[in-house]
Length: 354
Image (cartoon, rainbow, N blue to C red; front, side):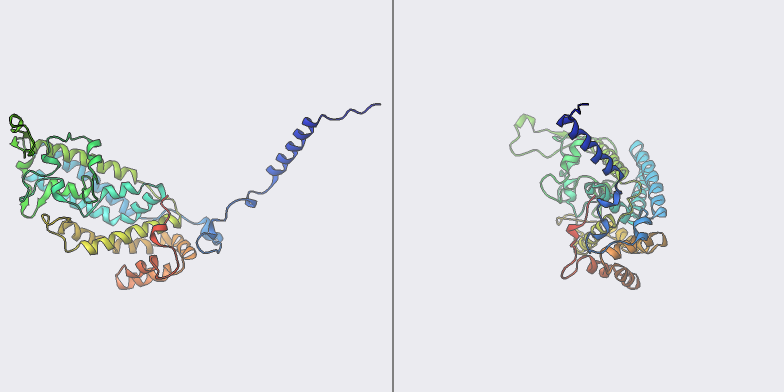
């Protein structure tokens, strides 16, 4: 009997099939990356790997949802019938919503980091800003987007105006909204500022003489601006709705975000004159102070977040001691020192953003 040789190509195919079957039988752990060694070179415990849950702040999330609803209702009432009562209600609803936002800030920052959308959080509450970029001030009665008839008020245009040429050119978020419904101490907002009526706008020096009588319905534009900015605020909050994944990288990123915010607040405290340049209203400062850092410290210490605390400690030792000291003192600085060690460690700019 004559034996036939297997063709070379068929032999290769058979060998490849055998190798594939062997690979399928191999355990997945043989090639899976060891996430626990990042940052410290020490593996996570089995408990830390399996017991992580999203950063818990159920009460804060509920309060924020309730205040969002109240703000939408107050804003709709003001836009439909501007009067002293609806304006006062909108101002109060803004303050309640901003307070809830600040109480829940750490969770929102964790979501922004985990999902890779830090720009949403930044647009929600960018400051300090130039008030005259948004609306008229006593020293500049024709200033701002509200009084610029050359700029069509659309959602896309307002997003383009955000930081158009400098960081202080803030067109969207909580601070412009407050300016629109509250004004400034020297010129408090009035209900008449939202009721129709045309007035002459400032004319550029190079305007043709016959085109000089430029008219702008500032109250109508103010209503449109308020509606569009309110809708963008809702969209950005929606983008940060829900829980972040339970991972220490996103939480450290969120802590770094809050750390930078608190440091900026300390630098901004004296700059509360709206006509002196960059500005943050005293009311906004008051509401941030009432929430932070106490809300974040309490949230971190919550029993439901124990596994995340352990994970942070394993990745970046010293966290739990810093948290304990911060709570004892009622002061953020121990956590700030942990985030920004004098030597070694991981700087906040290296935090994972999603």
